[in-house]
Image (cartoon, rainbow, N blue to C red; front, side, top):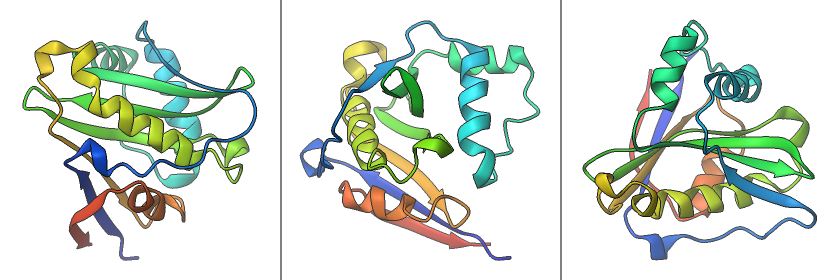
Length: 170
């Protein structure tokens, strides 16, 4: 089955088009104490239905290496105290920030949270240098998604102002 991958970017924080905020108790918090087990849980549970398999064989040491790397951050969206989704930011020294992973837990899909969480994720990508001055100011935020991801993923990225800079089908 052919898989199409879209690479999207934002090169100006002013281009962010925020989604509407959901009603109720929603908090977006940074995981300030890197936790390999928590990150593995989020990856496995969010990615279970979307063919996220590249990290499944990782050892706990490999997870620790990933989450403790300077400039990497995990952000979690909580709905009434329950994890609803997460995003991983990978800040590079050249001012680029990749949204390495982004998604909602299955029980929270279709509740109007994805656009809001992406808005907050992109804001945190743009201000990453405030928390990691050694990374330099963010000049570009990028992500990739594919036809194996959720049906609204591509539209959500585009709705937030990200633009496609490459597309490939394999």
